[in-house]
Amino acid sequence: MYNVSTIPFSKTGYFSKTICDYLNQVEKLSAFYGEYSDLEGFKNQIETKRLSFKRESRTILINALKTQYKNTKPSDKTLVNIDSLKKENTFTITTGHQLNLFTGPLYFLYKIISTINLTEELKKEKPDSNFVPVYWMATEDHDFEEIQYFNFKGKKVSWNRESSGGVGRLSTEGLEFVLDEFSKLIGDSNSAKQLKKLFSDAYLGHTNLTTATRYLANKLFSEYGLVIVDGDDIELKRMFLPYVEQELFKQTAFTEVSKTIKDLEKNYKVQVNPREINLFYLIDGLRERIILENDLYKINNTDIEFSLDELQYELKLHPERFSPNVIMRPLYQEVILPNLCYIGGGGELAYWFELKPYFESVDVPFPILLLRNSAVVITEKQSKTLKKLNISQDELFLKQQDLVNKKITEHSDLIIDFSEQRQQIDSHFEKLEEIATQTDKSFIGAVKAQKQKQLNGLDNLEKRLLKAERRKYKDLTARIKEVQDAIFPKQSLQERNTNFSELYLEYGEELIPKLKEALKPLDLEFTIIEM
Picture 1 (spheres, one colour):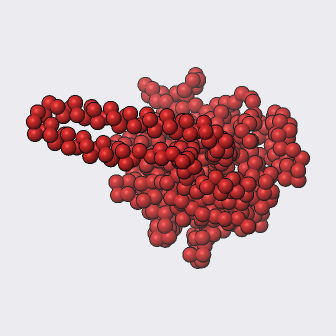
Picture 2: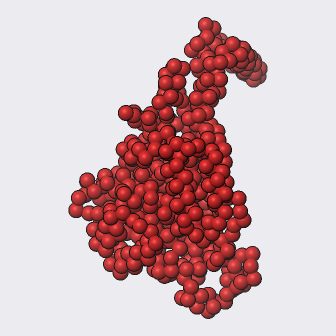
Picture 3: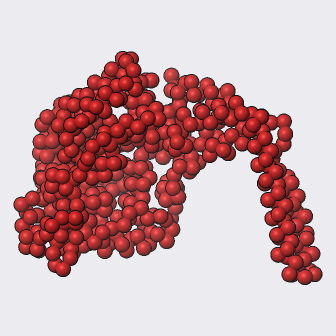
């Protein structure tokens, strides 16, 4: 048995104003996205995508997927989903993620589960259509430092090596040492043995990071029909070629996104800024920006350069060498997939908000944006501790010092809340300000300064009393900090730090089914799972 509850994202303190405004459908953000992530929005998006996505694009996509899966054993459900893509009433729901070592933080699972659950929910609502969950592997990404480790019970398990170029092409050589280190940490229970085998089969049984990650994601989720897409594919890149040419020769993205940013930044923080050319040149061991200088297309940090004619020839001969950056990758995805919705975290959606006019300028439908499920898993032991300490779910999300102070105040015989005294000071000085106004207005500044001095004195007194009480309730303070640190490692969300292996040791093969049952993508609230 386990309990599932939710609280609004805005009450957690971990989500930006941009995302909270999106969830609340605040008017000033509405110009930066298309259909909203509700059932009515999906109904409209289905018709838009059906009319725009060509039959020949479906054929190219299916052929590319069958080639990519050649050395992977997908489930029957995944095979059915791939074959269904030939039908004009089949659509994808997509999430994307880096090739983090052993999935990286927990939210890798939440992204994919959100995607799978949404396809199932849409199928119930629209039984005449098919919905395929897609995980887009960020194989062309080159930020190795972000993916080369995962955390296990506060320890960083790292793959220490040099890297350059797209991470998907990296050899898995050396990961046997990571497995040795990991094995020492997790013990020898049945669940630990399963984790060791999963790691070994994925990383020691495959030659590069792309095939290893495909194996891992397929092993975890193929029973739910997940389809895994690698964008580093010559045929898919060939389909995208007209948009690459437009970017190289007209710099459309820079023009359109720059205009959008000017409007967006009036109220919101801008996540990324466009380059004049939003493409990389990608070959083994190299992924560098393409720069236009003096009518020559130069590859940054190299001696490689192309004239206009040479570049056009290179495009036709080697489309796979042109890799979209963060601004163009969303467009690439929407061009090659019959996609309705992109599911991502807050930071991802924030940069998607910069892209709608760009999509419109190149005549590609802008997808629905859905904030992925976020969750915290609380063990039975932690739940019992929270009850003993009388910490509610809402209180659990308080800043640690605020939580400690609140609980100490509840336990203390002293009254450490000086709200009444502050109100009295406000009242007294309000009258003094009235007198000063009627006599000599130059006294108002002195009155306000004296008021602030007394309020500061109260604040200092309150802090000193709380500090004294913390010493008195030292054990209580330690227990509060210990349980909150366990649930929110490094005073951050569990999903951003903890690897799934920690929970797998506790719950084994039931972990993913339980998470799947608990997460509801269209509820648009933060999920608390007490297992």
